[in-house]
Image (cartoon, rainbow, N blue to C red; front, side):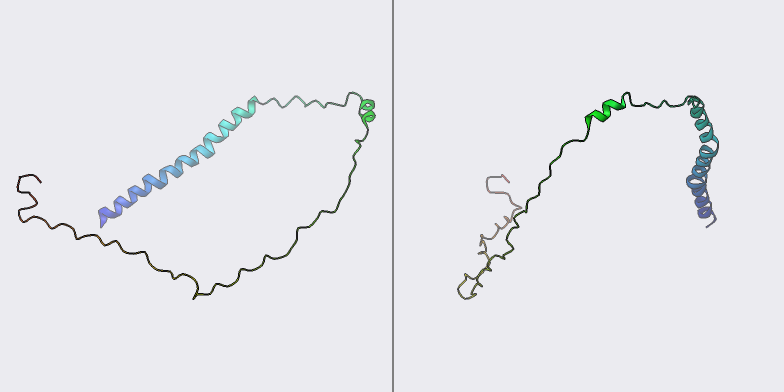
Length: 122
């Protein structure tokens, strides 16, 4: 029982403790250094330029577009239900039967000498 417990402890360390430790090192030590190296390259001193309209008079001369809206009543499709089919009389309908069974001959019986024929072939 002692060896079995030791094997479980080794497997736990190998598959849980080591991966969690490596992930913590990467997250807390390596990650901030990588982030700082990228943040150092970004130039935050320049301000974005704002583009102002060139000519406001030109924009006003266009005006509103001419739109005409018309409405017409849409013809609704009829809501009549289709006529139900007449009930089928069970006496007049053809009886449902199973397809006929294929009566094939019985399988050949094996030869008493192991299946060999008289001429020596199988």
